[in-house]
Length: 364
Image (cartoon, rainbow, N blue to C red):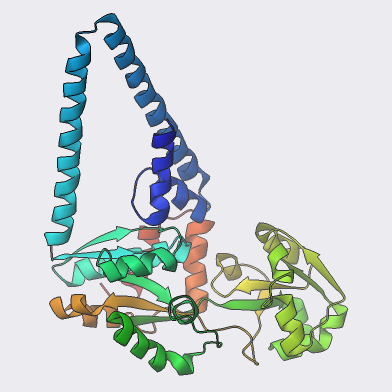
């Protein structure tokens, strides 16, 4: 039973299984998927346990059955290993299959579906997407190096710090250096920069932004002593959180409130807080009464989204490059937030949201 249950964790490292449903449900805030995946794993565990119990009773009743049971189990194991080996062999010898990985985030599920449909519509290639790889970059990067994956959507700031291990703050003036390092160290290329920047930000209530003409963090710093700042618990402990705002902008708020990430937007909608940290492609931003401010002193790194692709795949399939480049500058922060909202709150399928985007952009 423990073994069956643990197989659900395989999805967290991109190995598939029933855990995919659970993880996708958690990521996209769809409890039905989470419950369905959990029930299926539980049912499978109970069924296998019942079969083993039956086998034990049979062997106790008839000792002569023990030898046949061992033979049967051995044959089934060999068959299972053969099928698994054949599947892995086919996976690697089918050169017309492009393997895409995505991180466990709503927008990554959408981007994965955008890539799949676009590539399959514009080329003769087949695309297999491994969705929601747990650990994100830390597990996808080595899988890219081994050839398990060919393409994945990444963020420039993450690549700079998590992959290249650079400690200086990234901004887009460093993109050529980032791109060159990826080519030289890993033989990877950045092809298809979507145009949106999923970075940290600060949002204030629209009423405050309009009343005081607040557009930048520096503007906010001037009126912060009369405002309440709400944020997740770790925001007030991180060096790049509240401490960073105080250090770079000299911000000092009248009061601060610790709150769960899921309550932030409700609190600002009820005027319980005046400002809060956000991610610039949060789905809730598309409907919340919030103005996102400009980080005029560049406290936070840039996290522009683009596709990391193995160079040998681009050489083997030159038709891929123009298809991926057609995605350049096609999605703004606001548009990505709306697509995230459609999946997370309206419970639309990522594939449907991706298809709508491709049609509206005349990409297919």
